[in-house]
Image (cartoon, rainbow, N blue to C red):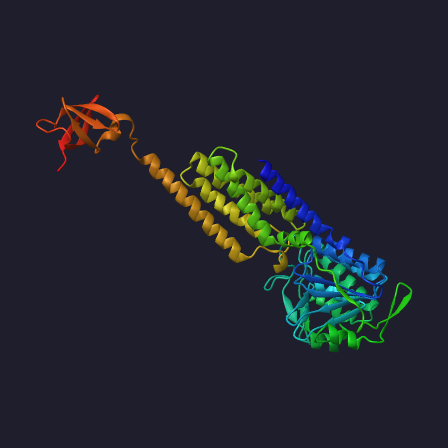
Length: 452
């Protein structure tokens, strides 16, 4: 017990040490370039990481902040906080969408528009900033009253009208994008279309459309092209000369990387399912053991993840109800009825677990199908075993001796299972040590036949 306690304490100390490692790091010299890196969805963990980085750059007298960006999108609230941080930080913030193959989609568009300098690597793209609906459905569905038509310029235009709430969300987001673009002298018209029509641009197209400032292969070329450029911000004028500046990488610490990882819809979904399965195992095999410990840990981590994700409580209720029904079928036995209903509820809950329909915050279809098939197969196998066991005629007491081999002993006795039994019939004329097989039990006497 003490060894386990020491191990837990050591693990906590490691995490805590990782969490404060950045704070204890040696302060970079004044005039350095602070490099922050964001890969993956924009969530509250990323927001805290970036705001912390902006604050340290301000306090450390940084010459600039370089934000490497590669994101499929993210949460609107977290994105707005990041944008406010960029706008209000008295240090030039350079957003670089890279390396090649990276993207700044959805939430990434707003962050790029807010940058003091926006640059992209070749073969990257940005756009598709249309906000998803609050209920998880797409605001503009082809073939319905929200069908889109092609305009004269080849872009898609909305034919019908969405719900009032959806229109409010779209109008607010488009005005926000237009304001950011206009503030930084960028193409405000395209920024609005990126929201309303989900337009996207390659890096070269974005440069021609005045959405970004530069297309560069890497950071070295970026700093060379920025030499002598002046940035006005917070009433101050910054002249960029970063080619020879000290460059300091500030990656996410271990704790934040771990939190960012488990705050993924697929991970949260798996943790939730595994946690319930572990508890079902524990309840079906009484005793506080591995199942209970593993289940509690998985569920705690899952509910942490769900706190920072756009959770749909109706979807969560359906998913949990499905898991409970399948577990009850194993415990009480309903001949598969609860499993059938549980699988339907579980499937619906899996599809509607989160409020958004963009890939950054959606459980993958492949994972849902894999879990459904595994769950159905597992619980179906368990129910079949239970059903077969209940149909089988119970064999108890002396009846289980039928078919067993015994050894003949003197005076009409046989030795079986550590005891002497009286033979009623079948052992006549057999020498001690001969082997016989029990064919019937008559009271406390055995009827046997010679084993050939």
